[in-house]
Image 1 (cartoon, rainbow, N blue to C red):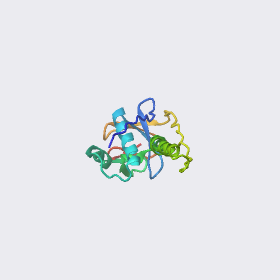
Image 2: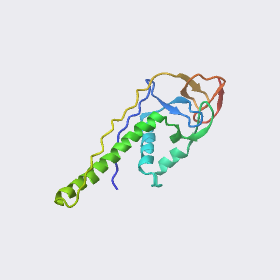
Image 3: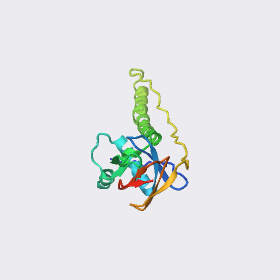
Image 4: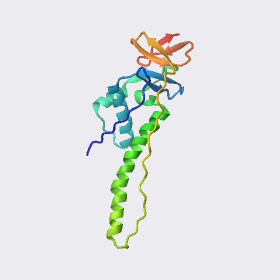
Length: 176
């Protein structure tokens, strides 16, 4: 099986923070992330869409997925892959759909057209190539306030926090 390499760039804000969303409370926050970690997370999400039936994965991916993180607002714990925002997921899905559509266009439609020409009218096939969808995601804004997580010595960005926030990395509750 051949390996497919796609380069997808998810926008970060000016300070290199990635927008995340809790699946439970639906509130957004941002975490600081380096390019390599973002690339790994994006690749794992794409791989999930391409290999829905394939349960084999790299040990490294399993370790990253098994690690638990916490929503800064509600404290709910979940794996990193669950914190994508809807626009981020749709953006990545567009790349995957374009990849699959290209395979259909190149392998199926072209081959059927060849059979059509060779059959001298015995076999008739009318099909149109699936169009490319231009992926779009809005640039990331600096719209949240930074908060230092003393427990893990890291920072996150949050909106309108009253009372307490939980550390994204260890779940420790910080009074604001």
